[in-house]
Length: 223
Image (cartoon, one colour):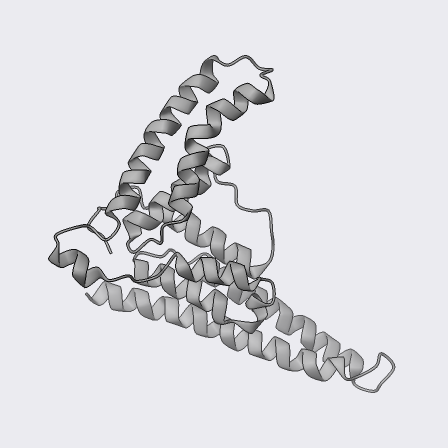
C-alpha cells in the first residue's frame, strides 16, 4: 500500500512538473508572439522562451520514462495527454477519442457479480492472436526471400483480422491493455522501436506501450 502511494505521488509529481513547464513555455510564447525582432527586450525574451522549451522537453522525458505499474497510472498518462493544451495541439479529436476509449472503466461491478473477467473476450482474442502469430512466424521461417504480395497478404491475414477485432474492444484491465500492446509489437515485426517521433504526445504513447510490454507476468485478475 505504501509503495502504491509513493508510486502515485511520483507520477502526480511528474505530471505536475510537465504541466507547470508547459504553462511557462506557453506564457512566454504568448508575450514573445506580440513582439517584433527589433523590439527592445525581444532577444532576452527569446532566450527565456528557449530555456522554457528545454525545461518542458526535460519534464516530458521524465514523465515518458515513468514506468506505469497499474491501470490507474496508465489511464492517468492517457488522460493527461488529452487534457494538456500543448500536447493536445498535436492530436486530432478522433485520436483523443480512441485514446480515452481504450482506457474506459466499464461496469466492473456487474462483471464481478457474474464472476466474469472484465476483459474476458479481449483476453480470449489475445490468446487466439498469439496462436495465429506463432503460426505466422513458422510460415515466415520457410518462406522464400522473395514472396509475392498475394502470399504475404495470405500469411498476415489471420493476425490482421484479429487485430481489428482487438482494436474495437475497450480494455478495462492491465491484462486487456497488454493484449493491445502485443498487437502493436506485431505491427512492428516483433520488436517495438517506437514511432520515430520527438513530439511529447507520441513519446508518452510509446512509454505506455513499453510499460505494458514489460509487464510480462500480468495476471488476468490484475486491474
